[in-house]
Length: 104
Image 1 (cartoon, rainbow, N blue to C red):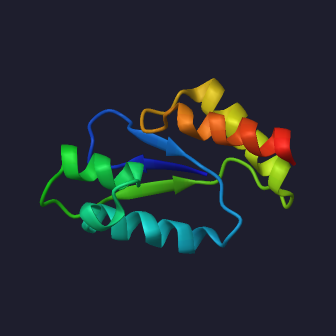
Image 2 (cartoon, rainbow, N blue to C red):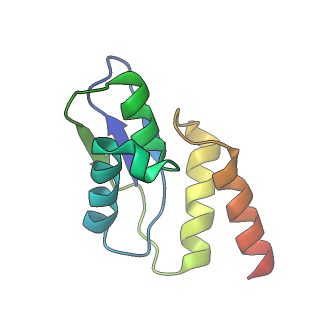
């Protein structure tokens, strides 16, 4: 999936993957954006605090791919991050994917 901050003039995106239902994951992002101190490791929450303090969070969500298998999902996520270079992702996602797939 890809989250886009709709409060920004230029696209600010985060790409991820989730085994759980997407609405559950989006709820986590919205909670982190409303209270970033309680979710310090959440990229969307950190962005909201830095770029839009005191403003209600506004995001759009796009499903990029759907894979039932964890390894395939993580590989798909890594490929999208590598190709699209979303602004809020860092190398830790790619390192986690490599670690997970090598140890799988």
